[in-house]
Image (cartoon, rainbow, N blue to C red):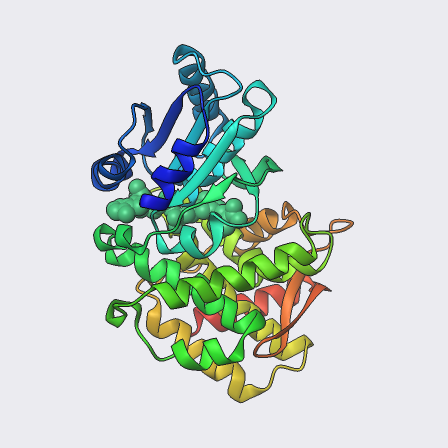
Amino acid sequence: MEALAEWVAKRSFSKTIILTDNNTARFCLPVLSQGLKIRFHHITIASGENSKSIDNATYIWNQLLEAEADRNALLINLGGGMIIDLGGFCAATYKRGISFINIPTTLLAMVDAAIGGKTAVNIGHYKNQVGLFAEADKVFINPVYLQTLPERELVAGYAEVLKYGLISDKGLWDKLKATPPQTITEWKEIINTCVSIKKEIVKADPKENGFRKILNFGHTIGHAIESYSLEAGNKPVLHGEAVAIGMIAEAWLSFEKSGLETPELEEITTALQSILTIKWPKKPDYDQLYDYMLKDKKNKDREVRFVLLMNIGDPEFDIYCSYEEICRALDYYFSL
Ligand SMILES: NC(=O)c1ccc[n+]([C@@H]2O[C@H](COP(=O)([O-])OP(=O)(O)OC[C@H]3O[C@@H](n4cnc5c(N)ncnc54)[C@H](O)[C@@H]3O)[C@@H](O)[C@H]2O)c1
């Protein structure tokens, strides 16, 4: 907290605006404002993935105007990946770009969303269709915020932690694959490892022309599942949960197409299943899921491309899989 206060004090921002959702306003803003000790404007929106919309972006831009924020203003995004994606998008476009910092408050945002400069809003239920690359001026990670995070959110974020092991660090995978996140009391080292992996990948390919795609392991099917479930309403699957399901199905594709061996497929399935706390009540409509996959940004020529694993820690990307192969991968997950 001191580092943040010092960082802000050293710069002469004309105004500081803090963006939260209703939960981070309640649980995280009191912690932050205690340490920050400066005057700020507060903008808050409803929590949940449906809030990552152009309507809310317009609301935030209007609020910035009303607060008379000029080009020297600072926006602080205090929240999970939803606030960070939306707030980054608004800051990067308002008056052609103002300074913003990310203070992630979920595990998922600490290890992933807050790092790497991707900002976006959804179009309807299609994920991240409008956005731009814009690096936050600074990211301040403080695991203290995890103390109020609901367990389901912690578990969902842990799927992304395990993803780093699968795409880049077998040692991390071996260390964490049998460790339930609820039993972890010391997060700093784990978060730092994930952040270093992500930073290194982003540095090698900032605009995702190639290598950065490996971060999307589990996300081609995962995003489709997330969109499908958001459209279905009721109790949507969380992003991290959808990614965990996606990683199991894509591990099966890796076994079919990229030489991943049976014991590794079984190991991945067992580990991810043991951390998943939700099971879909019934099979989704595969055609509709496939339609969502066709909108994935990594595709070429209307062909769905995947990140697959040759071994644990050793991915390849841009791998085409047919509709039939994708259906068999989904069958694998839904038969477990
Ligand atoms: N930009 C990127 O590189 C990137 C990477 C991964 C995911 N994402 C995006 O991130 C989003 C998912 O992020 P998320 O899982 O953090 O979801 P989220 O931001 O919706 O937060 C999850 C829930 O936790 C609540 N919450 C947050 N912090 C809390 C705290 N400390 N205490 C109590 N409640 C708290 C929120 O209000 C919300 O209800 C998706 O939109 C996804 O597309 C972006």
